[in-house]
Structure formats: C-alpha cells, structure tokens
Image (cartoon, rainbow, N blue to C red; front, side, top):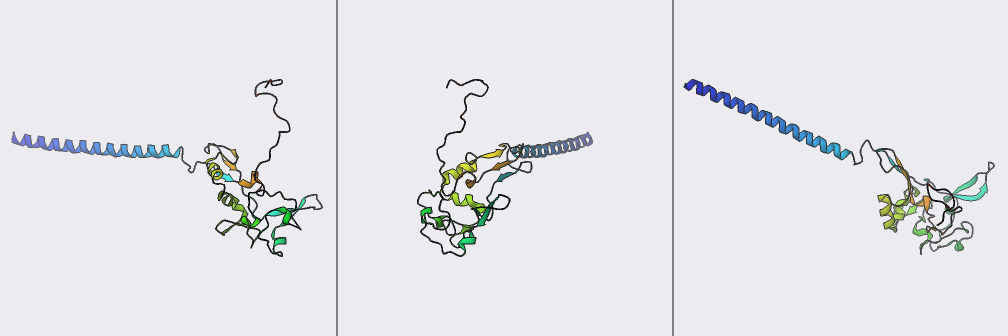
Length: 212
C-alpha cells in the first residue's frame, strides 16, 4: 500500500511538471504572437521598406541667369553668376534694381528690407548665406527661406503648404513636392492679385450657365 502511494505521488509530480511546461510554452507563444501583431500593426502606418519615396524638387546646383540673347537654335543663352561677379566688387548696400547699372536692372525686388547680401554670399555669388554667415548651395534654398518664414516651413513639413503631385498614401505610390522658389520669386515672393483668364461658369455635374 505504501509503495502504491509513493508511485502515485511520482505520477502526480510528473503530471504537474508536464502541465507547467505546457503553460510556459503557451505563454511564450502568446507573447511572441502579441509582439508580432504589434509590429505588423506598426508597419501599416509608419514609413518603412514598403513606403514609396517622397521627392522634394531642387533648383539647379549652379544658378544661371538669362542673358536676354538667343543661340542659333533660338534657345536663351544662360550665364553663370560668377561670370560677372568674380570680376566686380560687391556693393554690400545694394537693395533694389535701381542701384544696378550693368545687369538685373529690370528685376522686381520687394522682399521687406532685405539687401542682396542678406541671402547671397558676397564672396561667392553661386552660393547662399545663412543668418549665421554659414554658406549653403542653391540646392538647399528651403533651409535659407525657413529662417524667416517659420510658419510656412512648419506647414510645408506637414504637407499643407507648397503643393505636390502624387499620393498622400505612400503605400500606393510616390510623391513629388515643390521647393520654395518653384512657386515664389525669391526677390518678390508675394503673389500678385490676378484674375483667371477664363473663370468657371458652371458647377461640376451641371450644364449650362450658372445662376450664381
């Protein structure tokens, strides 16, 4: 009788060990499943390998100016800035086209009280100068504009300023965005008031002349 009781105890211990092992394996499996589920859910809305690329348009690396002349094919002859500025001393006080004698006389310049060298690097007119006197290339013009136009830059980063083509949902396709000087003349950035050439006469889905 005592031998049977001892055997029964051994069986119970083994059974408990098996049950504990099964419970432990189940818990690990659930934890791994939960982690995988969270990771899969995260990848559905955060940028990852499956997201398409967002391209921000950039101006040419070397700025060019239209000389007003045409080549033999009728294309405008473009001139590099340093073609002239390398041989001329920069007037640090120039702030409008009226002060110019040889070039840019017809430029519209209305950008608050800024002078030319507020943005252009006087030591290299094919680069730009930030407020802290560091220089950047024309390609990074957004960085220059963002110094003063903070609210617009904030809205640009959030997608509500600057315009774009492509997809909001980057899982469906890519997106191309404008830079500041794609839309704004850097020397006269405010948009002029204009009337559309042919204003709309009817609402979408209707025909005939609108009564409004």
